[in-house]
Image 1 (tube, rainbow, N blue to C red):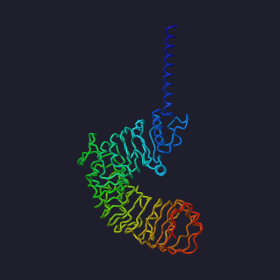
Image 2 (cartoon, rainbow, N blue to C red; image 1 turned 180 degrees about the horizontal axis):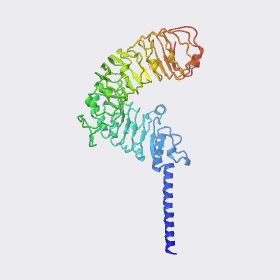
Image 3 (cartoon, rainbow, N blue to C red; image 1 turned 90 degrees about the horizontal axis):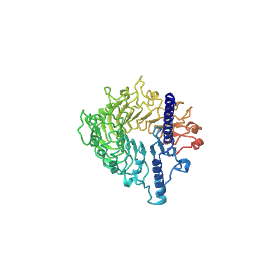
Image 4 (cartoon, one colour; image 1 turned 135 degrees about the horizontal axis):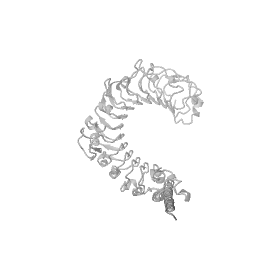
Length: 500
């Protein structure tokens, strides 16, 4: 064989070898992408066995025969398209605790959270509504998931001590521990290593104390990037924390809100939910000026004084929702002062009897389209229905509550247009007149109508079910209707509450 032939032969052998290696790698990738790693399948089968032992129900698709080896195709499991490993596990309501308790007494689902270490690429873990389980007894000891970003522990009657086991979840971005049995002060110190946390939901627990200490103990970074924990003084040298959503609704927290200086490093906040607590004092202007704030919910507290919005206010242009209902607010608010908020979708000022709300501004067309408007029981402009300049500009309303305002004018049947998007309408306890006819266009989205305690008269339309086919609540009580009750009311399939 000549030298030239040797070279050709060598190149052919090299090419063949390279082809075999590439083919093996391709086969490996294919089996990873379309198969299931053995250790992950085994872990899922162990979880299924623990369910069976506690008289729970294993998802039907889990390991039913040789053709079901691919756990990536199982219910409640999602795998990465790149690595082929399990990335999402959805165990919410997987264990029907009430049924098991009724049938088997004190049975509960026992599983060891260390089993989740078999899923090194896990990013999303939903363990909500699996009470009673060993999660309530053993907590999260041994849970080491360096890539976990979303953890849902809601509706489990967990104690606050379970949060102490989260320190090693360094990639965690979303933590939902709402609707549990946690109490005491907000244990934000145990979250000191979670510097990537963007959403924290601790609503519907029993936390007490002030918000000031809680905010100061949230994890934050200095400009060098090192974590600073504890009650570090807030100053301009601190970089803003990554936290974007803070939800502490339905707790027992109290006191005044922190100062602007304390809020200074929360400049990334998009949503702040503090409803149904015992906060007092005034609402500060800076809350409405946070650069990224979209939704601010301070309802159900005892805030007093005016809403800090005026013609000269520097409101964040990101604002979408303002909920200040059920407080002791006073003073005046003109919707014209919201004229720069093009993204505004929701306004709820109900239950502030001393708050004067000016809605109708002649010739003004708002730049926003509201989806929810609730102005029940406040000092509302009495002409909002009789002279509905503002309401006629809002074409995307889903929720409209103008009850308890002694409003005058005729029943606004013009709301029921062909394009109407209304889902809930409450005009109860006013002084409206007129009737419910004529209404020409079926309102397929409308689920609730409350127009009780008015002066509306006339007969009910015979084709009531054709006009309002989706109603679940209808309250026409304390009006002046007369005539026969339309038989078509009995044809509304979803009706639950009917008051005549």
